[in-house]
Length: 237
Image 1 (cartoon, helix red, strand yellow):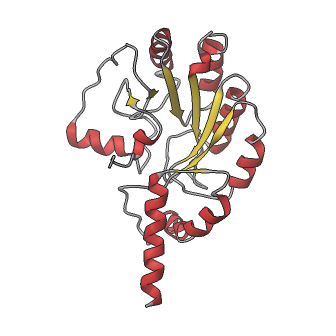
Image 2 (cartoon, helix red, strand yellow; image 1 turned 180 degrees about the vertical axis):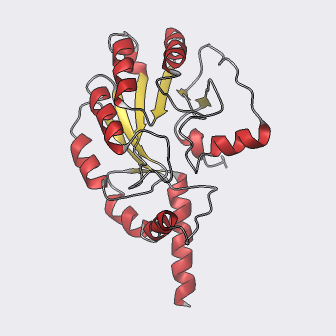
């Protein structure tokens, strides 16, 4: 039996990066933890024809500071007719730069932008990342020009989901909304922001029942939901 795909492999067959650090400083970032442990050194991605989708980047984000190098790499990969999934918490300025650079590229059909809308009600989890409003503005600028989807991974707040769904479901380039949960991060109930997420995850079975027909759920969501179902079963005994 084949191993179940998790993480990056749920979305793509390959991952490429230009760096192993990110200026956003997200508390839950697995890349930051890995880099702290293994001290990765930056290296140039191999430019060639890849079989399957490339997720780029996976261990850093796309910002005003690295955009040119990111765009140059994407352009080279497109020359080999690669399919690229661009996952980012980008702001509107970066979105504008992408449109300027690639909207008229004959191979832009090979691009899909997956904008991450994970923002909390404050900047606790993502202290230096673009705000929720900035990310909405980025989506609005990207969606008329490219295939796009939305990621709520990790799920930190559910309050805007109805608005997100109703706003983008009718767009011609819309490719869906993905939901995933925190992994390898121990939530502390003594911290109010983390207690909020603990309580949110207690409702995962109900969230799934309500949205399962229209959203896409990652393996991390099902694992967290199963933990909640086991907790309920244990409390019933």
